[in-house]
Image 1: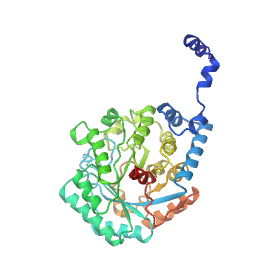
Image 2: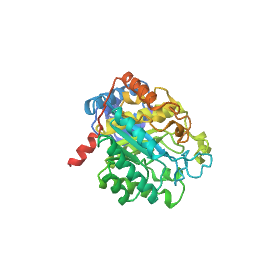
Image 3: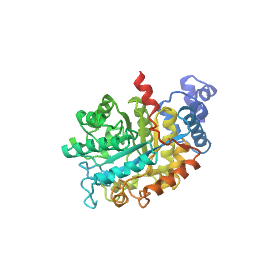
Image 4: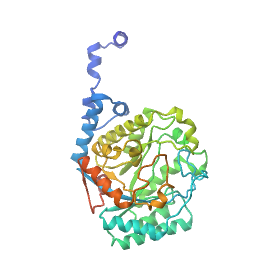
Length: 382
């Protein structure tokens, strides 16, 4: 305090003036807009401040998007990938991975289960390929899913970077949401976790997010939390980036290392899994306050650390859950990170488990609803 008093004397302010100019944490939470330092304070919140952050985020979520949680039945239909991201367990150079491509009939059976059980939507996720064979296959799957569900199933794609023509083709065939995670909005950090070549370009990632918007998609992205080399400033800037690009939905979770990846060599630079988990919850809460009307997914990676991880995220801001409908025979081979949960559950078990979890979180499931982003609707009206 003596040092503060000396500094204040230099700048001509009294100590009381200085203390009055510093916002309390409660004052920050009541704001409609947040600066980067405000967000850093949220991400560092402990004790009473952490409790206040979570309470404010839960109240904002209920007031703006309500208590409903929407299912997105996840079908990981292929782990064949052309990318070599340094953190990913299914990266092209990982020779230990057993590669697979689920048969069309298995994919469609999973989607039929989602439709018959009134999930509302499915997510088709795969490794990143851009061959004409892959593009044509996804196109046909989209048309078949729309046909079998009589147009009732919403469809999200997560198939990586593609051309404008491909994105538009898939949109015209029935996909209306697309998830393409940026992983870090800091170009330098992005370069630390991806190979240094044209096939792993930060600028290309940004361009694709813009193309998706122009094609009419509800666009989702997200970041990893607790990466090596990552700072709290990086994460606060990630949140501001999501707002700046006017995103509709976000999926983000804690970084979990995988021993068969180059980034594993830097595991000594990361905090404990529990610390990454706690930070991920604070990120979800801060994002709900920053962008109240978007969709936020409760990442499966949260449950890899804490058995109740996803419902904890639902309580403080998340409103999307992705039950895993991937055929059980393939689940163990789609491990982007270690200790992925629910590898042995069938679709019925996964649904029943999540129903109970969401009820415990004080929420209800929006059965038979697409659960489109409120933000997207408002964005379309501008």
